[in-house]
Image (tube, rainbow, N blue to C red; front, side, top):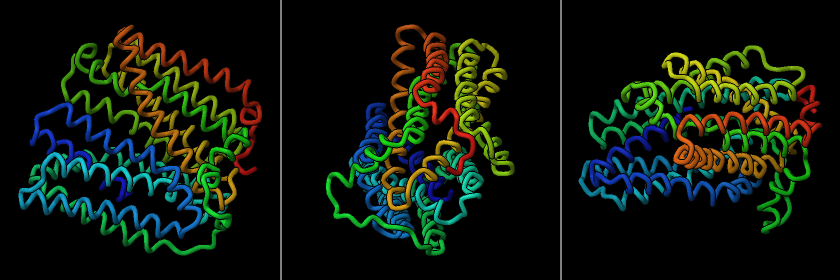
Length: 383
């Protein structure tokens, strides 16, 4: 939670400082690109690392890289030598660090809890991540009032505490990959996923649902042109899915799904599609907020089921690489979803784009029930 919140705070400060320095929307876009490209390039190799090295140390290394970037930016901002090139370099470093961190962070959970508690643990993990994603940018914007050096300094302090917590995780025995490192072992996660219909179905269902149903890119249009609100309204719209997800995560942590998990997974994705259709036609601010919150809650159910199934269906010596595949699909689907929404909106308008996404998500649910019957019939999370 702390490392994710710290990362979100740094990203807010980077964007604000870059715009202060250059007043260039292009440079703001490049900052995002500098973080996205390393994530795509290094997440798969990071899965190999997580299967061969103590995952606590991999977590610590990733957070330490973010600590170094925050400390450098704090010093540079105070000394006055931070420019666009320094921010670009820091963005690359942050992207690499998150790529290294994600597979180890996902794969370490099953080693720390019993199989029977994994669903509850995944729900709690998802809940704190949602909280960090919501609270991190808000805190980062508030702290930046004191100046960039103060903002980066606070982030560095958060990363230090994160490292302490990472090192405090008890060491547990995990099965490690023994075969020599090769191109085949690096990409073994893809081969394994391709042979496991339950895992492949769960990951691909989420991928297509997010690509088709993602509407984040449309929120500024809805806020300004359809709902007639200002920046405050946009902020609430962006927070609504996370709020819905947070409440659902708390509910699943208290009462995890125990039976008919395949049905719950497909039902959740279908509800997500329906919520997007409701969002498409809504002209009322409260109703739009409710639709987005419902979509966030439904998406959380699918995330918890998918993450738990992926971990339980994967042997420990493969969890890092399979988690890397999962993380790569997630990051790619988010970016493609925003592009899909914007591109279709330019052709059909924002309402048409959202409607196509919602209907497309429902079509995917129907197709995936036929393509992956093992997933649809899955009763319990534990195989």
